[in-house]
View 1 (tube, rainbow, N blue to C red):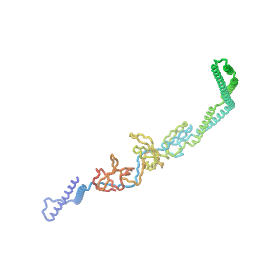
View 2: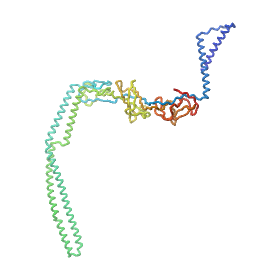
View 3: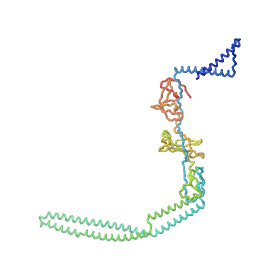
Length: 506
C-alpha cells in the first residue's frame, strides 16, 4: 500500500514538471498545441507540491529502513534493556470486603411493664445515651410497688420459719448428743466383750492342748502302769480336766462378759428412747438441708426482687444506647407489655468497625496478624490492621476454598455505612535497599525463574531467586547485581549466545 502511494505521488509530480515544460515552450515562441491547457488552481498546486514533499520523505524512510535492515544482519538483533536497580519495594495484597460492626448489642426487656414509646426505627443512626424505648410512667410505678411488697413478704416468711425451727433445736440437740455418747458406749462395750470372749477361747484351747500332750505321754508309760511316772501323769491329767471346767480366770472373764452384756442392753434401751425423742423433735424442726434450701430460696427471691427494683430504677428514663451506632432491628411495640427477657432493639456499633474479607489459599501465606491496611470506603480513606485470621476454610460461590479474615478500622467516623463494600490494600511485606527488576522481564521454566541479560553484545541467561513483589517490581534475592542490563524480551525469541545490539531504556 505504501509503494502504491509512492507511485501515485510520483505521477502528480511528473504532471507538474510536464506543465512547466509546456509553459516554457510557449514563452520561447514554439508552436502551441492545438488544445489549450487550463492553468492549474493555486490551492491544488500547493496540495500537489505538499504530497510530493511527503512522498520524498517516505522514500527516504524506506531507504533508511532497508539500509538499517541490511546493517542489522551484521550487528545482531536490536533489544531493549533495563538496568537492575537498588531500591525499596513493598508487597501489598489488594482485595475487597464488607464493612461490619465489631460490637452488636441486643436490648431485652428488663421488666414486664407496659411500653410507653418506641423512639427509634431500623436504620436510624444513634448516639451514646440516646433513648431507644421508654416505659409508661404509671405502669412502672405500680410495678415498683408490687416488687417492694414481694420483697417484704419474702423477708417475713423467712423470719417466721426460722422462729419455728428454733423451738425444736434444743430437744433435738440433746437427743443428738446423748445418742452420740450411747453409740460410743455400746461400741466400746461390745468390743470389750469380744476381747474377753477371745481370752476365754484362748485359755480353753491352751488347756485342751496341754491335756492332749499329757494323754500322749501316758501312752508312752503304758507298759509300766505301776511306775511313779505313770501315776504322776494320771494325776496331771485329772487336774487338767478339772481346770478345763473350773479355771478361775475363765470363770472371772465369763462373769465380766455377762455384766457387760447387761450394760449393753441398758445402753440400747436408752438409745431407743433418745431416738424416739429425736424423731419427735425432727418432726417440728428443719434439717440442715431444708434450712439451707429455705435460706437459698429466700436469698434468690431477695436478689430477684432487688434486681427488678434496680432494673426499674435504671429504666426510669428509658432504655438508653450504650454506644454510637446504627439500629438494625426493632421489635418493641408501643402500648404492649413484653415479658421480661423479650427482645426489643438491636444496635450495631459504629465506634468499633471492621472489614470482613476472604483470602484465597494462594494469598494466605502473605497475610498475618498486625499488618497495616489502607482502606477505601466510598472514596474516603481509613487506616486499619489485620486482627483476625480464621483457622478454618470455607467454600465460596465458585467452589474455591477461602479463609475469612478481619481488619479493624483504626479511625472510624460517622461517614461509615455498615454493610457497604470496602476496598483494602494490605501491606504484607517491605524490603529496603534490594536489587529489583520489572516483573514483566522475569521468565519461568521447569527449573525456575530466569532473565536474559545483554553481556558484551550477546545474550546471557541467568537463573534468579526472587523475593517479594509489588505490582510493578520484583525483588531479586540472588542471581543479579545492580546495574546489569536485563533484556525486555517483548515477545522476542532469544537464545543464549545470540548477538544483540542493546538499547538501554529509562
